[in-house]
View 1 (tube, rainbow, N blue to C red):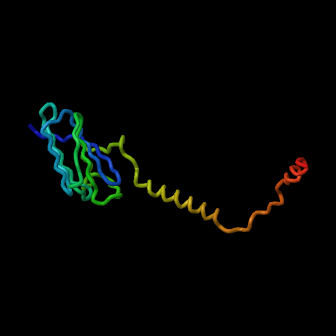
View 2: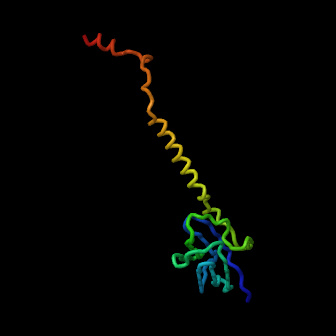
View 3: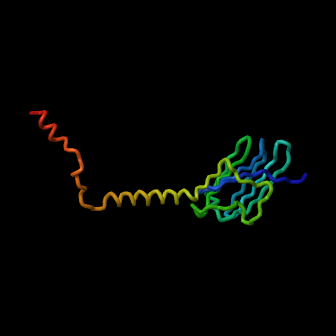
Length: 155
């Protein structure tokens, strides 16, 4: 019987790359995470052997990576070697296998978050600078003088 690939979803985060091998009722599950690749194999409910081998886009920390199994899938949390570096793809080669897809339900464009935050901090700092700049006090001669009417009523 020939091996097949498990449908695989992935998404990127600042510290981890997440992969989900979508196999319901899997048995004989084996996950090998190395610094440059992952090897996944199992059997599905029909006894068909599934096998995926992925050469990573960049180096990972295999010792700080793990996998979690459920009845519907096997999810791998792979720690990036260089944190806060976005991966444009999961694979080393710029070729997208048909069984590999981006998990758009979990995808977030986190890379721009720091830039937005930095812009907000700079804007706030600019506002503070304007407020704290020493200027002569404003002229108050255009204000209504209610104090005279208050003094005459109290006498």
